[in-house]
Picture 1 (cartoon, one colour):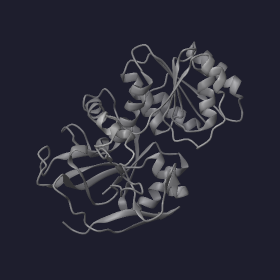
Picture 2 (picture 1 turned 135 degrees about the vertical axis):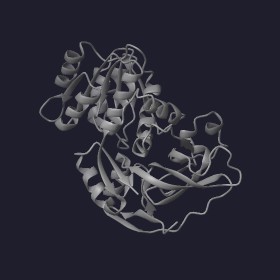
Picture 3 (picture 1 turned 135 degrees about the horizontal axis):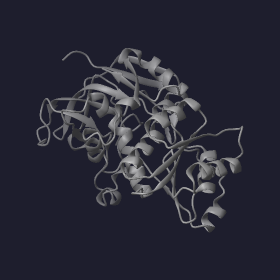
Length: 346
């Protein structure tokens, strides 16, 4: 089987690839030989700042929560998986007993073990254990790289579900990073008729135009918020029914609240600062609904189905590849914003 190695974060910019203890599984878990792991925006925040949201590095943690691999050992009570199965790993292990878990909203569990957080090591390692019923078998026509990228796609599908995207929806997506792009791709597959995307980086908007956007708008200090609103309306031909903030910046959230149609909806999926200065009153007086979207809720199976059926193609979305030994180089590239989806191979 060989030694286990992992990419371990000790603090901001202190990422080390080193030997790591071999996991010991219990009766409900499986041991997985990892193949591919993607880098997420939250991973980058942990790497550059030593924290992301309320999560702060207080001890060494294994990075990575966008993973896929092959099952090499199963626990005594596991009946859904066999040795040799290829799986995409949904990176959570909720408590299953709290009121939210029992209601099916396990993404809001107050005490989950989530990959690459203080509560649980991630899967950017050669061997990783996970509870079996959050490991999803992938079909033969899906690559391991695509299976790793299913994780952010599942987040995007949950966001679109929360936003109520349907046939004929007109969307404004703020932020053309990986989650924004996948939100737009998911919305298109769900029947959205017109999509405009904004970003502060022109190269990302070029990618958006290739993959999913009908219109794009470069925003930033060169254009006022009021001018941005008018440009959105002009390019889309109307105000958007739904705006999805996938950037986490207050400036994007302000634009969303100002631009969205009366009676429309603003969905925030980006990880934001704890405090934001927003024009709430005018939006609320127009009955613009505001919702949040957190992680994943029952969207791994539909994400896998969408990729397998080619309703959503992830291959153009995956742009860079690194071996685990070069994990620090991969994270340094990710923080520049020049890559869309980086996959680390084990």
